[in-house]
Length: 135
Ligand SMILES: [Zn+2]
Image (tube, rainbow, N blue to C red):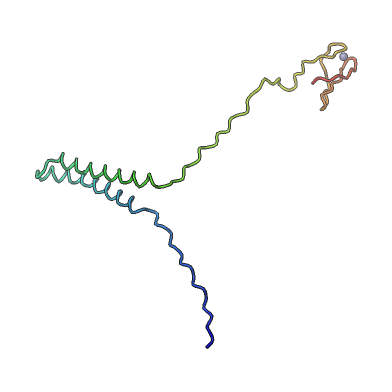
């Protein structure tokens, strides 16, 4: 009796976890309930006069506060990504740089301002043709 080839069982793929935890859903429900109690319960109490509206308002406030506390507890155990602070690019330090073009080194031979400075920093005096370094 030949044994039929059996494919390996496919691994069970876990479904993605729900986005909202039950705790946060409960806290949101609490906050909404407290809000409605605070809003409409107070109004109903004021209309009917069965209980004092301040009591209903306080009850709604307590329910809302407990919902907020539950939400805080749920959020504390949750790791949320912290947005990176924006990269502040500090401007380069402005050092005491002489503006380009103003060369203060005169010709060592005759004292005339240098002219025709080439890219190596060698100037040629326009009067006595002395070549000198201006850097
Ligand atoms: Zn010169």
